[in-house]
Image 1 (tube, helix red, strand yellow):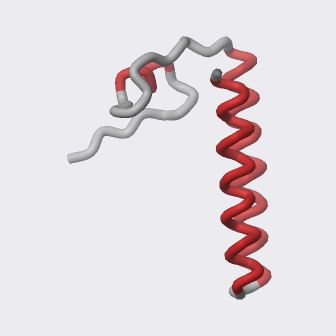
Image 2 (cartoon, one colour):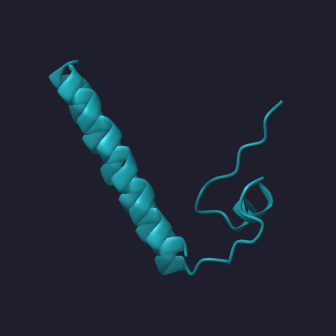
Image 3 (spheres, rainbow, N blue to C red):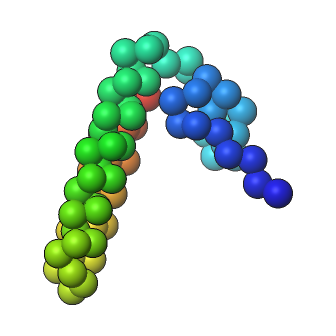
Length: 76
């Protein structure tokens, strides 16, 4: 059984095999991270409504990457 930890929860620091140390985020940083992820999820949902194509696959992949980098900025 896999354990899941909310990304805005301080317990996220105990659930990673790659990064060995996390810092505890402020409440403002947690809100920023959640807002960025919510915006990304909304964009991906809209992409799903539009349809499937190679271009849409590229749009989705780049949106996921943009969210990843934005969250990395907030959590660094």
